[in-house]
Image 1 (tube, rainbow, N blue to C red):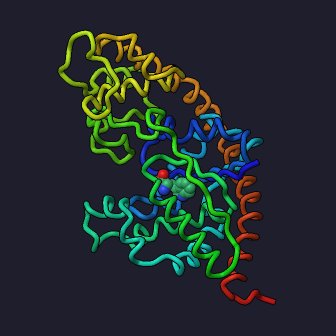
Image 2 (image 1 turned 180 degrees about the vertical axis):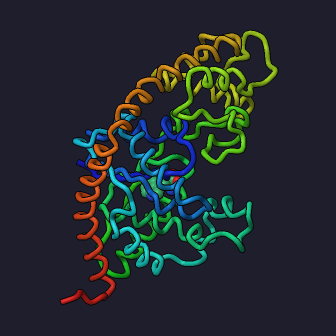
Image 3 (image 1 turned 90 degrees about the vertical axis):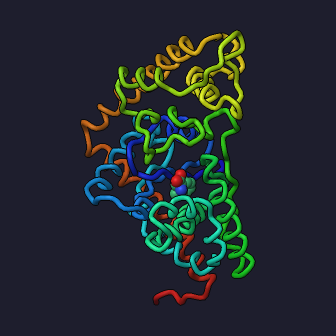
Length: 334
Ligand code: TRP
């Protein structure tokens, strides 16, 4: 079975883009591979936040992943900071990557542009290296991620190959597995359909939270930005010229498990499309929210899943780390 690894940050409120672009693929994959899914709490420290919020968000994210259908008997679910090898390997990879390579990462440029590079945390700069460590520790074959992580995966592959060339075969070079266009790789903000739906979005009305109640979902979908086209072919899938409508069609197609063209063919007006989309999203979220309440009522059960996951992950990560330490010439303790 292929080894699969992916991670999700415990920041902000989890939203529909996370579910449709990532988590739902994790659930689908969990019996097809030997899957490791990680709540990457250390990555969350790269941007400002409160300790209490991180603590809460980590548990919430793990609970939500279980509620969304991850089965602890089928996959390994764990928290990044519970496995020390992640930060340990990260150092070896910081000594493999070049400053210039990190400098070219578009996500660093985007995320540091707001407060300025000068104030950005060094951890934001080295973020992709920790991500590479996450992946390489598990001899990962395949990494399901959203489209925005493509560049980080390329860097991970480069670092793995460079390390192998320099020090001898140590790491598996992983493949990115990115959902095809139209299948959730880029779910857009409902208010600003040229921007990705995001946890840190400045338009909360454009982000559907996974904990939103039915009335909130309906209101947000109803107010989603479309365009002023009318007439028989107003409802068509054209992400370039009709990004708002394209996003709604994509969401409905995914929620229903049908094709975009089929969905588009059923509507001539935006109102009915939105009404059906709201209903589909509500029925997608309801069972997840119910399961969340059940898991959340038993926090020790969640903690046990995470402890078992960390134990399993730690065994594998330790062995890979030992291989890498030896390869670069670090002397093992007697
Ligand atoms: N950077 C990823 C994101 O923001 C999260 C992440 C961290 C990740 N480590 C990972 C994803 C390892 C895949 C594999 O979405």
